[in-house]
Amino acid sequence: MSEKATEIARETGEYRCERCHKLTKLRKGDLIPPCVHCGYDTYDLRNRRFDDPADATPFHGSLKDDD
Image (cartoon, rainbow, N blue to C red):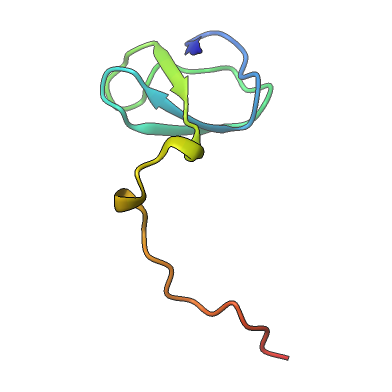
């Protein structure tokens, strides 16, 4: 579903510009601005379920508690 500049963000998340594909972080209730990178006015809400695992940043931390 597309979101347009001047609309209110329906949920908190990363909105991906449909033209340049750059991400803009918005909170639920924020006024959606034109893309700060290219000025385009239409976004898709990024859904991490569909991200390509090959594009993921590797985790180098520890999951163990340091108690």
